[in-house]
Length: 493
Image 1 (cartoon, one colour):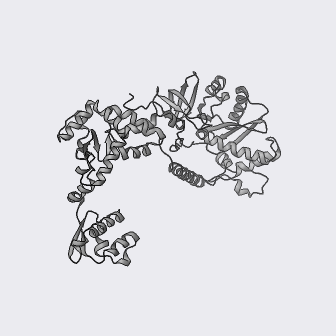
Image 2 (cartoon, one colour; image 1 turned 120 degrees about the horizontal axis):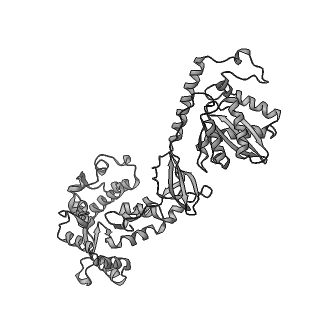
Image 3 (cartoon, helix red, strand yellow; image 1 turned 90 degrees about the vertical axis):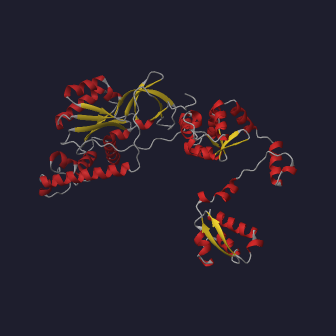
C-alpha cells in the first residue's frame, strides 16, 4: 500500500506539472505513513526501492505532504471508486472512449451468469423490496423483514442494472442462495477458503453461517475430513495402595498368547503364557492366583476383548467384588498403562530368547521390578517397601525398607511428573463437544481414517459412546472417532 499511495502522489504531481512547477503546494493524502517519508526522510533513509524511485523523481518540486483522515477525504475517495457507466450505446454520447469500449464489450458478449441472477431477482419479492428501499434511501428505517438485515451496511448498497451491489459484490436473492452455495463449494475447499472466495464476488446476510453449514454437511468433504486432534488428558486419581487398581492386556508373540497383569501404582508386572488364545475360564484361573498373591483389586482395567466382556468373566468379577472398566475399541491409549506394560514385557521376552518360563526371562523380569522409576522408587519398593535381592551385588542397607520421608518425597515427585506430562499433552489438544443420545454421527474408520460409516448414539460414558449401526451391530467408540452428521443449511431445512 505504501508503494501504491506513493505512486498516486507521483502520478498526480507529474500530471499537474504545468501548474505545480516552480510553486509551493500541499499534497493531501489519507495514507499517514507517507508523511514522514516525503517530509522528513532523506533519500538514503528510504529503504523501499520503488518509493525511493518516486521520491527521487519529485525532488524538483516544492511541496509538503499532509494527512487527512479517510472519512474526511471524501471527494478523492469518491472519484477513485466511481463505477464506469455502460448505459450509453452511442460513442458520441460518451465522455471517455474507454467507456464506449467497455459498453460495447458488455453488449456484444453478455454474461449469462449475471443475466440468470437478474432473472431470479425479478421474481423475488424480498429482493425487489430491498431494491426499492435502496432507491428511496429507506433501508436504515426498516424495522423488520428482509430489508432490515441490511441496515448496518445501508451506505454500501447500490443498484446497477437491476442488481443490488455491496461495493462490487453482488447481493444474491434469497431464492438463488442455494445454487450459489453449491457453486462456491464445487472445489470442496474448507470453510475459510470458501468464505474468502464468496467475499470477492457475492453477498447475502447469512453467507458466513450458510457456507459453514454447507461445508459441514457435504458428504464428500466429511468422508475425507482429517482426524480430530487429541483431547485434553484425563488422569485418574492415583491409587492409595499397591494393587488397588490393576490393568491387564493380552498380546501375541511368536504364535503364543501372553497375559500381562500389572499394578497401576507400582508398575509391578506378572506375565502368563498360553499356547492358544485363552478363554474366559482360563483367564479366571490365573486371575484367582493373582488375587491370592497380591490381594483383590478394587478396579480392573482391560481392553474390550471377548474374554473380558463375556458374561462368565463379568460374573467372576462381581463375585470377587471387582469393578471392571474397559477401553474403547481402536483407542488403546484409554488403557495406556496396560499398553506400556505390554511393550516392556514384549521387549524383555524378545531379548531373552522368547520363552517366558526361561531363567533368562525371569532374571530380566526381576531386574525390571527392581529398576527405579521417575520418582526414584522401583516397582518392588512401591509394593514391598524395599528392593528384591537379585544376582547383582547389593549392600544390605539397600535391601532395608525406606523411611516415610523418602516415600513422601517420591510421592510428591510422582505427582509433579504427572502434572508435567498432562501439561505437555494438553498443549496440542482441544476439547470436543459432548454428543447427546439419539444423535446420528459419522464414524471414522480406524484403518483408512475415512469417515465412511454412520451410526446412532444409544449410550454414553464420559468420552465413550455406544453406537448402533445400520446393520443392527452395537459397538463402543471414543469421541475422537465421531462427528455430528446432522448439520444442514437453513435453505435445506
